[in-house]
Amino acid sequence: MNDLLTEFKERMKIFHTTEDDNLLRILESSKEYINSRCGVSTDTNQQAKELVLERSRYAYNDSVEYFEDNFLSQILSLSFDNYEEGVAIV
Image: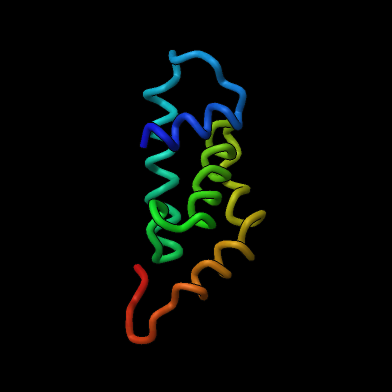
């Protein structure tokens, strides 16, 4: 998770460590959200990782309610790419 934290902080131009605990919670929440919606591990899929970073950006800026509308096509695309017949995504 520290690599993801480092990448997020670089993307957001955050150079201090005072928010690290909060950022880790945001990243973990975003990771769980993407895993549950798309049925794919964010550890091994670059598209899923990108969605985690984007959702985290929205959450950090108190705009997470807009994420799904703005990224719905990417979420659906990733879900369909990883769809397995007979396997329910919950």
